[in-house]
Picture 1 (tube, rainbow, N blue to C red):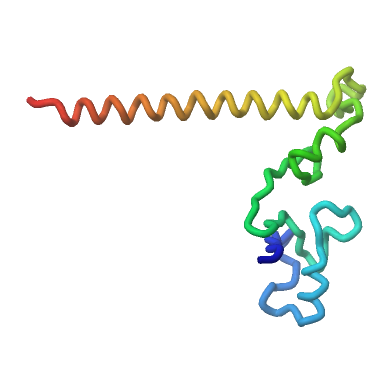
Picture 2 (picture 1 turned 90 degrees about the horizontal axis):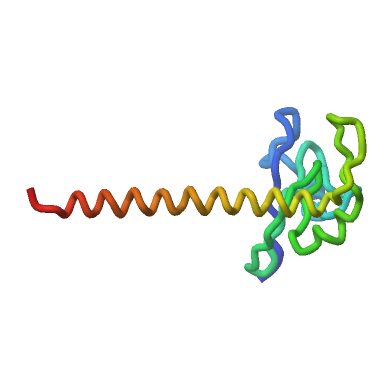
Length: 129
C-alpha cells in the first residue's frame, strides 16, 4: 500500500485532469497539502492524503489544511480578529478547540434527536390498532 493523494480542482480555468501530460501528472503527484510552496499546480490543489489506508483527521483553519495532531504546534500564535482589528488574548488553537467541541456537541444532540424520532416511529408502527 502506498499514499493516495486526492486532488481538488481550484477553478474552471485549470487544466482538465484527463488532458495532463505524464510530466504534469508527475509534478501533480509531488504536491503536498502540508507544504506552502508545493501545494498548487496548473489549477489543481492537493486537498488531503491517505497513507497506507489510515485516514488522518484534517483541520482547515484560516486558509490552512493540517493534521489535527499537528494543529496545537502550528496554531501557537494569538488570534488576530480582522473584524475588530485587534489581537485577542486567546491563542488560535484555543479558539479552534472550542469551535470543534461546540460542533461535536451540536452534532451529538442532532444524532440523539434522530435516534429518538426513529425509536418513536418504530414504536408507533408496531402498535396494534
